[in-house]
Image (cartoon, rainbow, N blue to C red; front, side):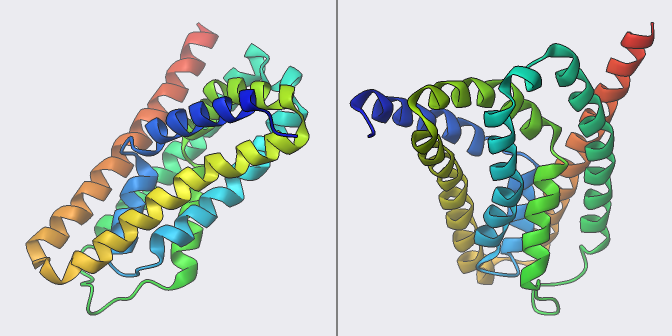
Length: 215
């Protein structure tokens, strides 16, 4: 049975989750890019995000004692940073290469947005580390209420992503008729800059961590 104390915890989950969702990042940039071509892009990206996020939440739930170990955190940080950083750089380059595909000439297929949600989430070192720090703290609290409350917590957290990215996608798609070619190019460049910037940061941070460990 869900208690009043749990509902208070759930309210804090919504607030904490929204602070992360509202922060511009790789997933937000990809949503803007895809939403210009498909109204449901945000919905599909959120589903792709959930495909990665739900298993991760359950993994943490069942292996908290091992996952919070500092040596595992460092290993995850380096691995995700290197692989994820390179993948984000690649995605940024691809977005830049496709900058001349106008909205009229190119309509993004459904699977493209779904896959973008999966890969952008999996490659985001910040996302993984958030779950291994702040997210793990929330899961530990949810775990103390029982398994069903934990499931409710997981769904509510994901719904914050779902509602935000779906709303952003819909708003962008509906306003695209007012976009000039220059506006569209500027948006693509913004997506390129965000993905390249985060990619370089994640990759560089991972290499710096390895360098410090060796030294």
